[in-house]
Image 1 (cartoon, rainbow, N blue to C red):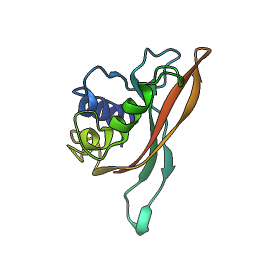
Image 2 (tube, helix red, strand yellow):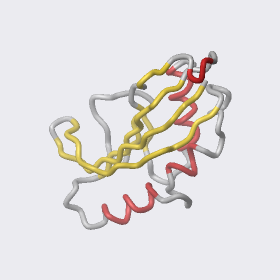
Image 3 (cartoon, rainbow, N blue to C red):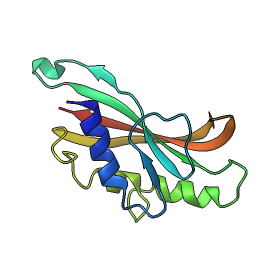
Image 4 (spheres, helix red, strand yellow):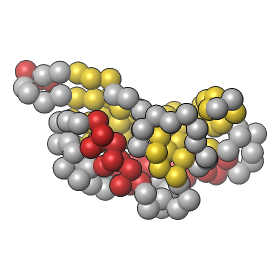
Length: 131
């Protein structure tokens, strides 16, 4: 697997989510709402085969954690289905356009993060990518 291809596949999968900006790499600045693809934790030769597995963090950054509307946004992004669902969008093409054998969104964890000196609400999605 090639990280750029997987990241671009994720970007292509989520680009249709209304209003979501997509950055397929770790950036110094983001303008919320934005999705940023992180760097993978790599495992080799899973099950004695030749497949490699990545645990890949993908972050969605939202407006300040104090905004009331943020709760509804978080709910929409972490939902199992719907127009704003990261899980639905990413898993709509499990090969990410041929960049991997399969991808699955395994977890969503809301929290906060400092980005360019501004505290933003963040949702860390954990993707399992097998190639």
